[in-house]
Each structure stands twice: as structure tokens, then as C-alpha cells.
Image (cartoon, rainbow, N blue to C red; front, top):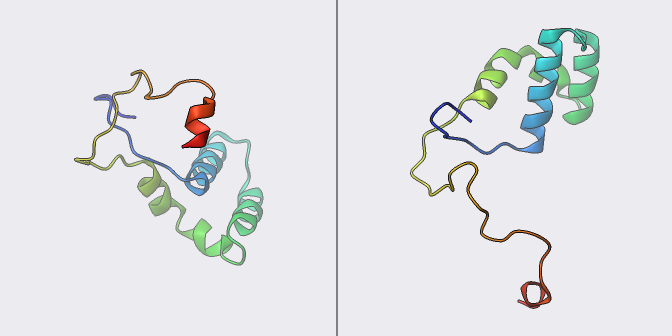
Length: 90
């Protein structure tokens, strides 16, 4: 989310890479650990993806402009709580 409240979606793979690159930047993850992790996340492609990590991180961190409707951060969700029997029957 940026300062204006704009946000973009992220896949579990994107989040995994983001957390890995941040861990590398702050010290807990080594290059060898990163390569092993990426090769497990993307079998047979870990080395290639690691080599492209600067561009990939830039792509993950960017918030793309959109004209799609998005609820403002902090707003009440359309439905909150567990689904009702009527919701499950629909």
C-alpha cells in the first residue's frame, strides 16, 4: 500500500519471494539458502530466478495504477464473519 492508499494484489509466490529478498537484505537468509528455497518454490529454475532477483523484486513492490473498483483500506467488508447457512446454500 502506498501513501495515497493505493494497493495491488500479490500471489503467494510473490509474497514468498518478497519475504526471502527482505530476509536476505537484513541478514537472516544467505545466498545459498535463497537458492535452495527458490529451487524448491520453482523446481529447476531457482538459479535463473535468483539471477533476476533485482528486477523481480522491483516488479513485486510496484503498485500499478488501476481503474478497477477497490474498497478503501480500513473500510467495512461486504460480508464479515463466518458464512451463514443461506450463504452456503446459494
